[in-house]
Length: 198
Image 1: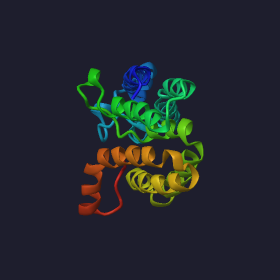
Image 2 (image 1 turned 90 degrees about the vertical axis):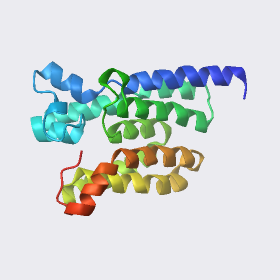
Image 3 (image 1 turned 60 degrees about the vertical axis):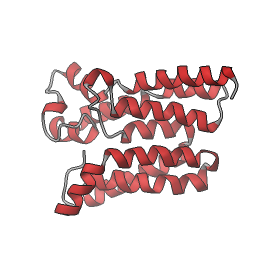
């Protein structure tokens, strides 16, 4: 692997992690002067918990921040003409930053919105298809966890069809989303589908 590629990958993946640690829920709620979502509801700093606690306006702001925060570094990765797998490493850095932020004791969110933002840059048709599926399921079953898990499961299959060069990358990103929802999977198995997603 060329030294220039290694250096670019390390720098951009590090920047991706740093961008990912900007938790939209924390900053949106702080600027709005409302309670930190990490100490209320499910305790998760994400769209669903902010929606339950503070309403649609702040939830949409949270979603926007979490989806957009990794885009600049991914645009840099594409501008640098990194191969698809390397762009995926940068995107994975964004998700790791969101899920395990150093500044917040490695306690972050479930990475669904961040994964959506990463896919919007790398494989936009996959991202839009997954978002449509998520919205339909969330409306139908009213459970964000079910919508997120199903969308993450569908993402690699959609990737094989719509963005085959990124299929492996999408599979890894989806696996991280599944890992972050592992606790919810256990809850669903015990209690059935009428749960609030986190």
